[in-house]
Length: 232
Image (cartoon, rainbow, N blue to C red):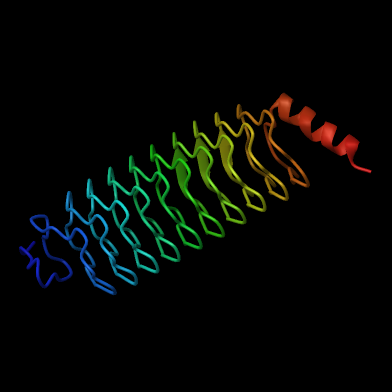
């Protein structure tokens, strides 16, 4: 891959020697570029195209990537602390082991994205499309995912303790060996979901829908029955 010009970066070039920290780069097109380990902290890149780019281990703390095309981009082990992704398309993206503490991912499309081992504490991910996404051993304590779609997503050994999941859809999702203790599940749907060995202790289930859910843990079954019995 050709070595790129840091002052005039182009798609499909190697930019690993560059420093874009604090740069103002709205709408920049770096499709397929190599940005592994690059400093992009506080960069302003709304409307960018980083599709199929490699940003492994890159520093994007506080960067603005709103409304960007991030399809198939690789953010493995990247620092995405408080990074803004609002409105971006992240389908099939890789966020394996990324630090996503406090990131903003509202109204994104992240279908079949891979968040394995990502640290997503206090993340905001409302009204997003995460259909078929992978959350394997992902830490999502206090995540806010109101009205998001996780249909057919896979959660395993994931932590969603204290999360705000009101109105979210987990239809046909696999949620196994995961912690949802203290989650807010008002009007949340789990139709046809597999809930094997997951914990819902002290979850708030107002109008939650578990129709056709499989492997419902006994403690959750009791919570559902108790809630149904208290409904006038």
